[in-house]
Image (cartoon, rainbow, N blue to C red; front, side, top):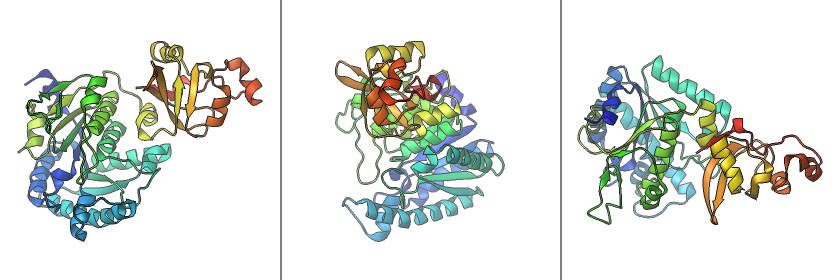
Amino acid sequence: MSEARSQLHDAARIVIKLGSRVVTTPDGAVDEDHLSHLAEQITELTRADKQVVLVTSGAIRAGRTQLGIRDRSLDLPARQATAAVGQIELMWRYREIFGKFGQPIAQVLLTQLELSDFRRYLHLRNTLSTLLREYRVVPVLNENDSVSAEGVQIGENDRLAAVVASKLDADLLLSLSDVAGYYDRDPKREADAQLIPLVREITPEMEKVALDSAGLAGRGGMSTKLDSAKLAMNAGVIMVIAHGREPNVIRRIMAGDEVGTIFLPKADKLRSRKRWIAYATLPKGKIVVDEGAAKALIEAGKSLLPVGITAVEGEFEAGDMVAVMADQAGKQSEIARGLVNYDSADLRRIQGCRSKDIRKQLGHRDFDEAIHRDNLVLL
């Protein structure tokens, strides 16, 4: 057993994400036999005084089967309709299966609104913590696809699981889907692709080869899993990507077996509010900065001043979260996220200006900084 794997046994709070192909059969029905196998392993964890949160996919796929919708794409209203039908089927099966093991569960449906608003964020955290600590309940989370639309859509349950793990200060995130881990190349296209058992840093080269190959059954491919792993690592959460249909996969991971790919987190955890800024909401726009500003942010821990801004993309209000992009050789890369002090129109007027000249451009000078250091998180 490797040193990295040996610490998994001690994880006290665990988030487990189950992909669509893990919870449903090839024809789209809820797979009761396999869910029972997973539920038994999860119940073993709770009986060992571990706290477990489930993030489940499969509602839309189960709804397709219930409504007799086969191999065709769905527009938003159809997705919402199938989710409404499938969610009932999915949760009924979860309740029946976990009930056999005497393990109570709770359903929690989320949209981006619950993750974007700080008050809702705190209420969600308190609700989940109460279920876990006081009642020993396994919360079963899913995106509320029946009402989610552009602007309130989380997107993928991989991201949802990583955000929840970050919010709850989880020790471990297990992403169980139809892939055995992270490979150096696409294993579906290249037979000699090699599984990478341990990742300490997600590099641009890794992101480049992570081909997103989601199909009708699910939305999240390897690129979304890597994004989730990066989020988890920045939050101090260990993440394991493994095949959810491997026999005893949860038992084996917790025992330290070399199953899947383990992503080890950064040493320093972001504080709760910083995690919310970085990951709980989607950027409303982008601010492009020059090389000097990027260096000041990354190396010196400075605030972002208007003088270092070269472009403002999108429309946003003061207080919104935006992505900070470094422009290197004509190619943009995201280096930070933060809450802006000025709206997009005002920022365009003062980009490139020194702080002392803000009043001349706007007629007022509310802040010297475009984004204060306290409201900025490096990625």
